[in-house]
Every structure is written in C-alpha cells, then in structure tokens.
Image (cartoon, rainbow, N blue to C red):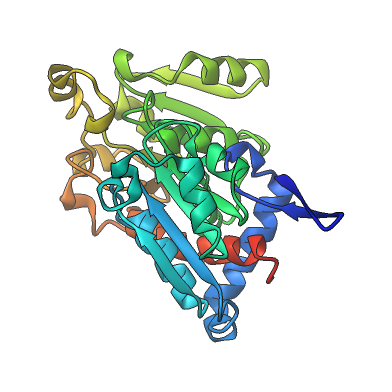
Length: 315
C-alpha cells in the first residue's frame, strides 16, 4: 500500500504485491465477493464500465493473463497491454519504472508479470494506479494464491484443519511459497512437502515454518504420503528456472500422479495444480472427481474480478 499526495490531500493507493498482504480477514472479504459474483454474474457486468486494465506481461502466460483479461471484460471494462517483453519498449531498454509511469496515463489498474523478483514492487512504487503482482520470478504470485484459497474454500468448505500436500518443484515454485504462507495463517493446517533433495523448499521458508510452529514433514515418497492428504497440490519442474539443462532433464519426471497412486488417496482428496502441467499429472486421472485443477483455473477468473473491484473501490 502506498500513499500519494494530491493538492495537499493524502490519497491511499492500494496494490497487491506480496502474498503476506493476504491476511485472513481480507481473504474472507474477497472470497465473499467472488462467491457473490459466481452466484449473480449479471449484477456485475457493468461494474467496471469505462475502466481500463493494463496487462504488462514480460514473460509467457496463459491462465493468469487471460483470466485477468476475462475478469475485466466480464465486469464491463476494457483491456490494453502486451504479452511479452519483445512486444514492449522493454526490448528498447525501457525500465519497469518508466513503463508503469507511462501506462498510468492510459489505464486505471495494472497487472504485471516479470521474470525478475521485485519488479512488481518497483512498478508499485512508481505507479499512479493500483498494481497487481501477476508473478515475479520465483518469488511471489499472490493472485494464484487467492485462486488456490477460493478453490480450497469452495471444494472443502473450509481453510483450516487440512493436511496439505505440495509435490514437485518446491524450490522455484512461487505458487508453493505463497500458498504455504497463506495456509499457515489458518488453524490446524499441516503440510507434507514432497520433493527430491535438489528441489526442497528454500531454507527461509522452512525456518519461518519452524519459527511459527507450523506442522510439516519433508519426504521424497509421494506414494506413502498421499494416503493422509486432504489436498494435493502438484507442480511442474520449471525448466525456465534451471541454469543446467541436464539437471532439469534428470528431475522433470520425478513425480507423476497416475491412477495407481490416486487409488491410495482419500475419497475426498482434492488434486490441484496451478498449471500448466507437463508430465506430472497423467491425463488418465483428469476424469477422476478428485481432480479439480481445471475447476481451479475457472475460480481464478472470479477471484480476480473481486480483486479488481476491491482495488478500484467499486465493491
């Protein structure tokens, strides 16, 4: 959140940059709004008429960019922006700070994705409009966290008292880092962190969990761990985060969720994935009612609609 001064008045400029801003009371507000949008979409089709969303995507995206654009269009607003750094003035050397200053002249709110950690914060500090972090490097992805929280809430009818498994790339997975932090704020949640040694969660996250007495175990055995999970959050091994192609090839197929593994799980397990998937979830489990990752993608549109309305003070 930033303060701006206009003709002697203090104007509060609100942004969403870090998952740590997603305190339970704020999440509750956004989930309530999203649920109302789901139940009564026609009441929201004109809410953002005359408003413009800028999507500044410096790296590839399908679900995040399109869900933001779909969210704004569903609210009656308009969308401008770019889908890669090559199609923006970044290719000419323009800084993020200068880009956001310019975009602030054309739009009312902005969603930015950038491969460098901290870029969304730089944008917020130089922006004249609300900025939403749509993913910065391997660091934060707060709107995916909101998507995940809405999904869990709608599917499990609660956000506490859950055993949450996170499997795959826990080192570079920004969605994993944000979700651990967010779900740690709800009572009686425990975590099972499944990964090869090379892709374990960063030490700073482990130390935070220990500091706050969050219950968790680390293991390399998905088949044994899956039996007690209420939620299984699968992730792909992210090729774009590796410096060594040989390491990626060696680790990319470490975990593959298939029918045989899913047969060991609870009947009400929720299998989630931020997508895109590569090989880590077999297509043979797509029709299992426990596989909710495409439903999860749909929820992303509604929670982003709620967030846009909140940051524009339209709720």
